[in-house]
Image 1 (tube, helix red, strand yellow):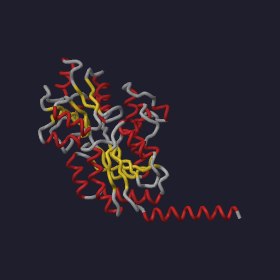
Image 2 (tube, rainbow, N blue to C red):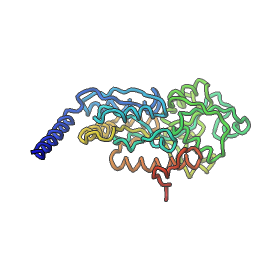
Image 3 (tube, helix red, strand yellow):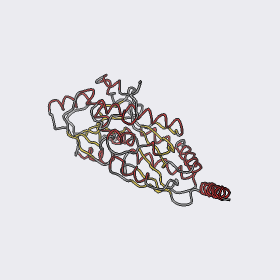
Image 4 (tube, rainbow, N blue to C red):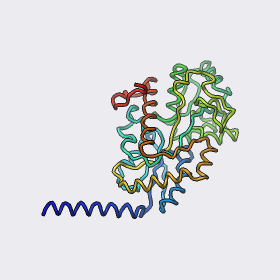
Length: 334
């Protein structure tokens, strides 16, 4: 009788889960954006989500939740119910939390709904900066140690990785790091003259460059970017960067592990279709992003490779608080 009762209970649970997934979404979905308004992650998520809503037949209410280099947003979603009603709209930073000593969770605690787009890093300066390119900036740092103000978004953010590259290639730079809650506020401060230079994702900086409000110094890639073809590659100033590039940030949507498979499937389909929508693709192209639209095993492989390459860069630069080996992350090529 007990076995029969347990079997009946299990059948009821499975039946309830299927009904739940079939009716999903029955209420508003929360979309928790790791970074502030106007930044690159915010731009990508607010561009793609309306198209996902059309497929889902529901509403995703997006909220910017800053702090802790994105960790506050990640922990908020990790502590929510695994029911598909709380999405993490994030960037690359969580893959660095463990080695940077910022937390014990990363995207391995989540299911990847979709990697939407990836970006290219660019170094931009205030229009009043007393140099016009990367070489001029390096000369200025040498002649004026401790004076250049460089925007940052905290340990593990794009600026910290690009700065780690610069320190590895050029030697330790004597500059002032000024922290902000995301690249949106930092780029606003850069335009206003509160800082001098900012490593940023090209997609967030491109409008400022096109409007003549920001001065592009170099693109951190191995190929000239079609969105800004006249901006030189950093490798043209120092080929020491070749071993680290190409590298760039990415943007994706995630849910807590344990979310019902049928709900995950609905979300994957919705954001997968949204990433292919004509105006989203056009916007990403205009902003200098590359559309990805990947999920499943392909997304997991990308995340693992990105994490390994970046954490070992930080380790070699002396910026990691914990060796990647402590977390079973092997050095690329080994």
